[in-house]
Length: 366
Image (cartoon, rainbow, N blue to C red; front, side, top):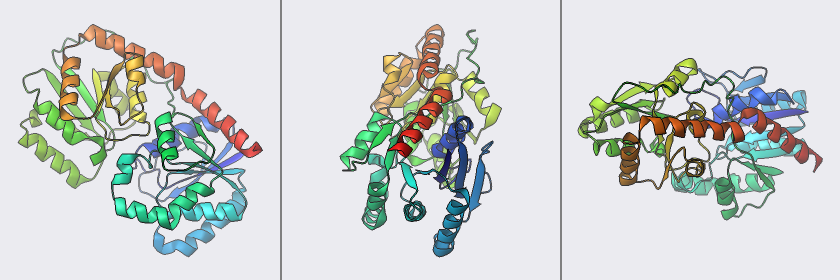
């Protein structure tokens, strides 16, 4: 079986969808031949064992791009094409080429139909739906969602194509559990690690931190993003008089990233919307309790007692941070251990990749 994935970017700065492709492909190559078609960028993630076509996806190259898509599909002759993401016209162009060559198409919206996302650039998205996106979703053979909440949002928009829920996975084999030894530092280390973007709620985190000025904690904000936006966040932390408590690190990768998780006592992702949140399972796999919002599908934080799942507001976030700060270190360690167990049971990448492979087989046989 040969599966071809199309994704707009696998650049390190492009967010969770690129990481999803990297993690999934690492295990899927055990079952299938994999090909990825994506844009040409300066800092792509490495996809070991995967044939990658890097193209100039500029809209000004529309007709040339169509010919390149046709050539790749004829050369690779995949059994199925898996399109990751929506809204970009290039996704629809590639899908049209697949339809013309009678290749089955599976689409993963990756949270791009979430209510928060739809509200941003509303007129542009409404125009896109009318011109091509609605037809694109209606024309695929199957849909893939990462959580039941995402599938509900898809259904609420009237899309009725067959779909399957398969969570994102993580390779936990090389992620060491946090050492159970108690830190002697009186300060709680709080980590935010994700793409620096307005939807991540970082302004709310800074506001919440400003309400806890006299408590013993430090906050690390790690991730890449627009430099002007990052500078505005720094200015906000200065205005709120908490700049001394917050450290902006920039992008952190590889072993350096896992060192951050290892040193963290608490992970926080105060996001407005997340179809899954790969950084949440990273934190849990590393044994770190999590605070996140009901804009994510992570009710299991409550079910497994390994974190806080809150309605997003400055007050709720400040309350959760306060509770975490005054939770004993012993209990935070126990919460982290329960989180690690949750990931081992449900989100190991080996299990997820096998489930995706079985899904591919079912689609091809349908």
